Image 1 (cartoon, rainbow, N blue to C red):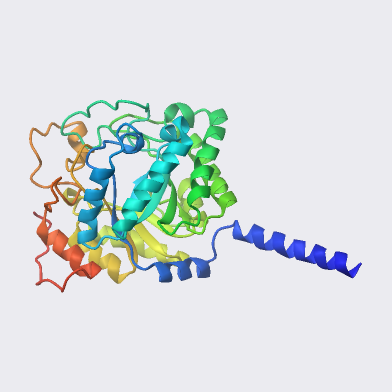
Image 2 (spheres, one colour):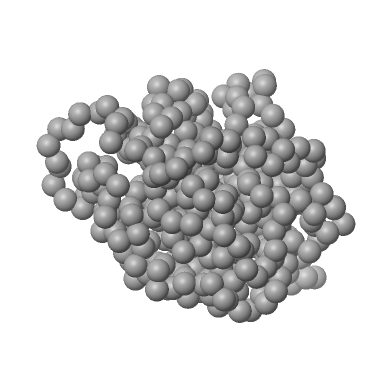
Length: 378
């Protein structure tokens, strides 16, 4: 009888520990993880030869040579992490082959001492996507070829959401204890309606359902890395006016992530209140030069406040994100004098050596440079 009771007690304890592990990380666990990880600095990465994640990942256009070269540019200035979008359609076509390419990519990143934050879903830009030839993006137009994941047709059909569960779980299961993966970012900018380019409205209820499902699926895997989704719009600083999206993301993420492309005063006013969650903080999108979101002001602030920083874009290429957002409605015949995003030209030449010198200084790649004038003009 005593043996039976002991076995039962052990099972109850094991069940309790397992159930607890599948919940949001405690503040202590999250902060211990961040203390060990250290400050992360990087970019949202797609190689210059790809206009979207399908082109980055599908077999016919996967380009490890360019990936290796361009991650080398990042390593030279001290970047130690990249935020990278995955794609459901590529996985659906051949899960094993896709996971093999992900592993190949992670091996390349490891040779450059760069750890990866992966993103599963994305509500931004073209809501309709397909495999195969991605065509040629409209010239000199910001992210003209980028596509959403899973795309409007699947997103707005709740019966098809079940197709997405094995996509998330099979990739996470494969890499859940892999030191090359640093964070799982489950959903990029859910509820973004793309109003100025695709007028993709009416999807918000479906996005909220998928957002909640993605957290549930990730918790079932219980990875060793934290999971998150970033607050990106509206007022997330007043708990009384939080949107349902922001409330869910901020209250269920292991670490607090956010996007902001404003000048430093407004950036700080949005970031400071997020400290109340007492969790590690990361800005996973910033740096739009023409919007006064620049390295010179923002990166020192984030280092001082121990906020990891991922700017949009590494190398100018087919994503065309050197062009401003309004290039969808205004024609730009030539390269803009002031780039919106990106750090390097294809040959590795920095857009601004003043910027790359600062990044190197803050990441410890070289001795502090001379004092720089902060004027936002390059």
